[in-house]
Length: 292
Image (cartoon, rainbow, N blue to C red; front, side, top):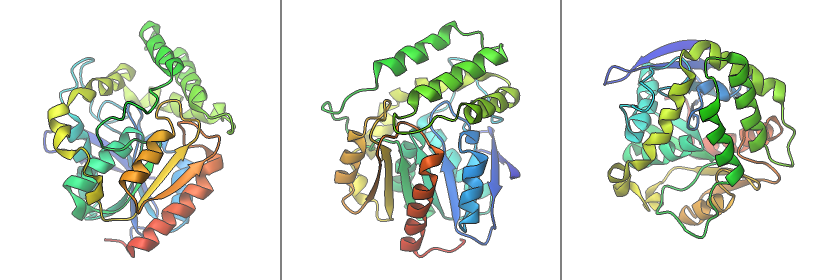
């Protein structure tokens, strides 16, 4: 992995890493809320690179080695997190890329596909939801996930062992019944994140960003404007964003391809990597892109 430190327009600093040949199509990986770029596992990134892609991952603000803000005072918006993705591309000297977003990362990807379409060659949404007016018919997040997050308030976030155990348990909960949970791999990433982040509690600032209604309102229900290839990847047993979100996104984007992961949850499971990579390669082929 090659490290690149990114400076944003407001003075924040983002930690990014890349792997693969700069001559190959660029793929930008955008992780979900409270998760650093390391939750795109090293092996997954290398597999993408071995498939002919120049892969870039980065830490959101308040995660990993990127800038931290006081707990409860994020000092940035969802729009800033979206703009950070473009700052990462700029720092790597890339004008356009294939955007792959997981969960919140998928939401940010949709925002950028509407506001900066000239930067995006294709869109991949993993375990995400559509940038649209909420549908009250779609089931909410599972109560068990909410209860698990609530337990975070009782955790000693200076205790490395306790934090690693908590995060490993949360990812275990999000694993679907048709997948094998790799506890060792999850604990390894959680351990590394604790060692390098400085303030694990800062990541919960992301939970305060959902109220940017004025910022989001102009973008809602405009997915039909997206003209690049779109791939939707979703597990049938997602406890955070139920599979119905994928079905709705497919309806809002009639030309999108849907990769249904039977038995998978809200996860990026090693068992699904080959299918995800193959479908992403198809998107790259559809866009006819080379390194730009």
